[in-house]
Image 1: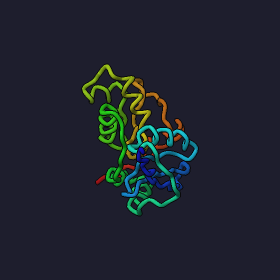
Image 2 (image 1 turned 180 degrees about the vertical axis):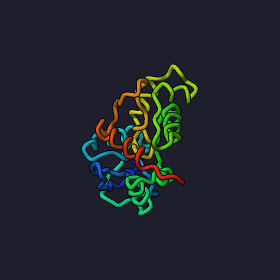
Image 3 (image 1 turned 90 degrees about the horizontal axis):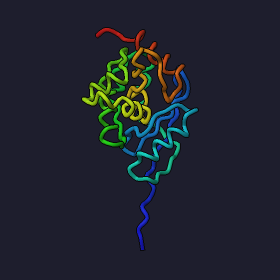
Image 4 (image 1 turned 180 degrees about the horizontal axis):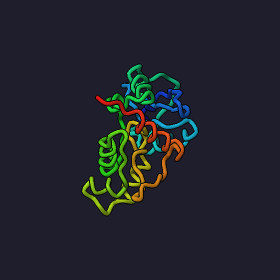
Length: 179
């Protein structure tokens, strides 16, 4: 008789921000597994299902750690460094992981084109693949996919909507505090 594994328990925690309600999905270890905006919850859940290591999970209402809330609150208050320390646990292909890791190296207040990101990865012809990996990012803000723009400097797609992307980039440009 086959053994059925129990579903992984994940916790859904809404957080009010200046640009809408953000949904934080954490696991029992308080690592963020997904983060997106309330109106994009279905897309977030699709990505979570795609990359969940246990393909079956149960979503319960819960609370993220104080450290997660404080780091995200700090981000929206203009201190962008604390989000770099939020623990995440996401799965993806080796290429996606490389793209996501490189995205985390883009400093707040700066942008990079998809082509420049592909070059940075040592794969200059992989612009479309970089775009696809960027779009599959399950942890916005922490993995700052909003910092990627078109080659001509234009605003290109963002899972949270272009208005939100404009706001995030403007916020980072005005909120940077000198050390």
